[in-house]
Image: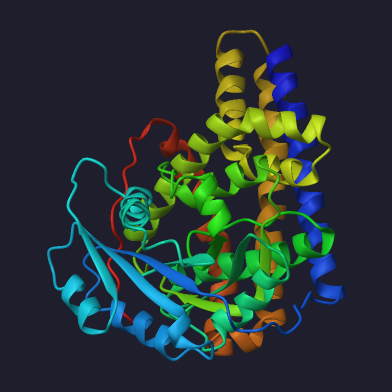
Length: 408
């Protein structure tokens, strides 16, 4: 059938292009000299924006990290939106010298809405005017003490939007936290670094990023409210012609979920968010890729393309057509056999990718060699769980729900 053939070609061509691009990025990151930014005067003023919901156990760690920065602390102001909190998050933040705005809204739930509220309040009062740029962190983050100093170098090199190296405070907790942590480290080390070398735009990953006053004014604060507001912000910026930079010397530590149920819920939201962003921004990205010959638009089209959903649709359609007599069962069994061999190769490839990430970034990975060996073996399980998650995301009404943080 024509439809099955089209899906086969799409999966092979587009999927193959994505795999080749990933392989090229890995090679570039291994052999190209990392981009470093020159020293810059530490004279810019920054606002740190933090959305916190019942984070009294961890918010103090991040505030301490900000107070201990090598960048002049009198040029760093911390603004926290205590979002629907029922604990002492607001009081803890105020006692540590932060600006705190409390928000109570059970209809518009999520980090995107909280950031909108915070920046709206700052803009209306004129409190946002003195700042050159704005950082966004999650309440559970920890920072290397040189973080803002390094980001300042990149900002003063001309980037309006920047992301940073994302590590984990609890990679060694178990196979769930290690799978998520290795994925983010891989993105920083292999993708973001290579995109910088190629001159492409990078992907803002939820936390540990900054944007200029100019970008904030253009967006009239924060206007991104899909389930993956960071990805939405990235696509909108690319469509505006911005090049998002990456500062690999600015290191952030994030806390990953430790239970499979929490991880599933979080990744279900991400998968649903990817589908939302693809729906709203995919056509415009493709158009920009063709008209402007913008490779960043090509890059992010490949990133957003729902390969797992297309693969599941291909299998289900093949079985349906065979049951209806439009194609033979043997042809579909042959296709499934081909897919099986591809799955085996994917398992090997994922273990190799996890192992390579650990070897290259060993100094940044806090775990014993025995633990890391186990995590290499478990990484494909973590990744293949995305298949049912992606399938559920098609039908589920996924909502933003907070992840409990322990403050490692």
